[in-house]
Length: 60
Picture 1 (cartoon, rainbow, N blue to C red):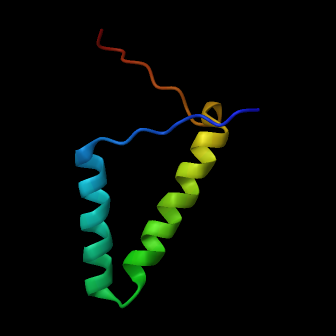
Picture 2 (picture 1 turned 45 degrees about the vertical axis):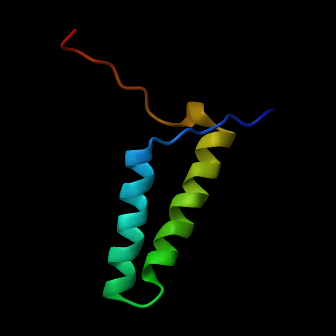
């Protein structure tokens, strides 16, 4: 099974970076734990994207 490529917008990357900085200000190293957790979930999403919920726009 091939992994899918996960694409993030510049805004999403900036939000993650800001989160890392924020959590590191709260507690030394907490932001890096946050980033590691996000990375692990991104890997899971790439490996099995169909495992997440499907959402439908009911207002269309």
